[in-house]
Image (tube, rainbow over all chains, first blue to last red; front, side):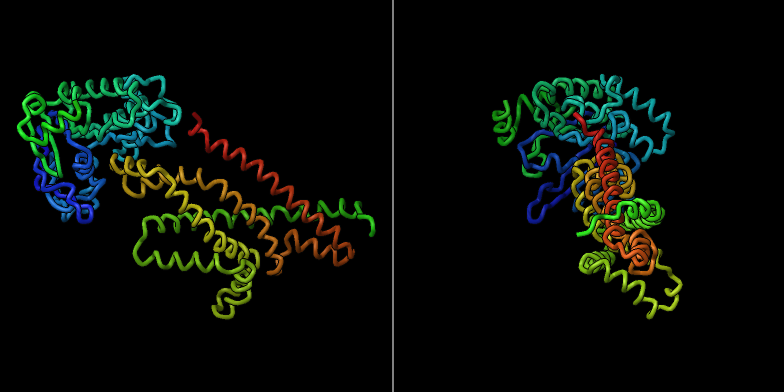
Length: 243
Length: 224
């Protein structure tokens, strides 16, 4: 249901994504691993045009975009078919936890306020933050903020949820609760594309692990294969470093 | 040195106070217009509309680069000689226009700085949930920029209240003009202008108290 062909992104002279091909089936959980600076985050950010890709096509459900000819409308269509969890949470600081989740439902999806509020409260309950509905982000711990960030992405009901190193900015004590919430999301067969350095989590949650290096997908397959019997030298070196 | 004529001053207070509504009206009208104009220019400076950007830059440069009094004279006495329809404009309107344009130029820069001060990742979060640029600005960026810019904007409003006294030079009888007229009869210039100064001072102090309350309100979301 998601099909990426020849996706390329350059920053100046540097090619960050080098003609990436990737298909993701509905309900599939794909984890992207690899050294820093190999384009993992850029891959995610190009899929919803936070970074504008230079070449390639992205097909997401019934939205198909040739990125060289993409209009503002195409970018919006991709963004509305996806949701994004940021490394640094990126909650709206002027809105409460509940309002952060309601925002997309009311402003973008045009749902009635009362309905959006109910949905937000339901999502907050699922994230275990029902009692924080009226708290502003500044009053929440890092772990709580990221759970609201995930809640905001869950509530949209997007075809594809993307997670850009969702635990990398967290104090170790908050990592567990965020990963737990992601596990619960995964259990619903939500299609997920996750960039993470949590290898144990990747092994547990992923249907497929994708190893990227130098802007290319070097190796991909079930976690058992990729993590336990890596074929490529770069992947072996990487796994030794993070082990 | 002669003693202050306190009785005269006390008698003058209600007369001058009668002109406070006009002063506040001019300042408030100019503030509202300037805020709208400044916000539009600030947003334009951030997103940079091709073609328009140069116009906005030129506007800001001119109105920051020339004195308010010169601008007021240019509008009120100068422009009607060039554009006949402007002769209809009275002093109050000209003062509001002048204050609007002058302060909009300053406020545009303050708001622009405040907009760029809103955490970039929140812009991206707004985009990621599918907001249009206008929705992002209106719902996420501008409310937070308002908080950042609020202290500066209140300072400009204070400046604006005091700036309305220049309407006197356009023949408007406001607080300053009224004091001038009174003093011309009594020759007690010091007393008359002292009353004006004290009333301005009290108004601005009252506003500063309001500013503190406003900032406390705006900072509510950011308390840890």
